[in-house]
Image (cartoon, rainbow, N blue to C red; front, side, top):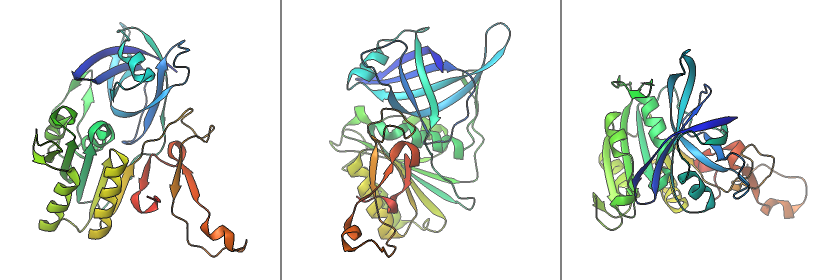
Length: 290
C-alpha cells in the first residue's frame, strides 16, 4: 500500500524518527514494515524497519480513520538516506505489518526488556503494550499501568546511541542504562546490568526476557537467560528483499530438533535454517544456533 510522510525528526546525530500516514492497521510488538520511496529505482528494493508504534487518528474533513506509523532508524546506507531526505506529503510504498512479534504468556509477572542501539523500537512497542499506554489523534494519553512489572535495560556504545529513555519512563519501567564509553549510566555492557540485576532479584519466577539489538548482544543475553533459567525471546535482524519468505534471503541457522534421522549419518550434521521474516523476527533464544 502507499503511505505519506507525516513528519521526520532528527533525534540526534544520524538517528531519525519518521512517521507515515496510512490506512488502519494492527500490529504486534516485534513486527515490521517494508518501506521505500514510491517510484524509487535506487534503492530498488525496500528496507525492513521495526514498528515503533502506531497511533490512531482521523484524516481529512470527513473524519476518515487512519494511522500514523512510526519507525526509528539510523542513516547508514542508500535506503535510510533516501528516507531521511523525504518531506511531509511525499509518498512511500509501505508493506506490513509482517513477521511474528514477541509472545507474552498469560501468567507473565515480570518483563525484563533489553535493548541495544537501534534495536530499541520493538522493545518500546512491547513495553507500551504491557503498560497499556494508549495513543490516539497524534497525542499521548496518560498511561494506565498494566499488571506487569517492567524492568528495562538500555545500552549503546555512547550516550548518543541510547534511545527512547523517556518512552520507557512514561510506560512506568524501572530503567537501567549502560554505555561502553561510560558517557551515560554504567560503563560497560548492558548485559552486565541484566546479570547483576538477576543475581540480586527474586523476579525469576514467571519472568521473561525480551531483547533486540546487535547480534553479539543478543547472544550474550541468551547465555544469561540460559544460566538463570529464564525464558528469552530475541528479535533478530537480517537483510530482507521481500519481507514474506519468497526470496529466501534472510535465513537464520537454528538448532536441530535432535530427532533420530533415517537418511544416513551425514544428515546429522546438516545445518537447519528458518527465515527471519516469515518465522521471526522474534525467536525463542534457545532455538537459535548462535
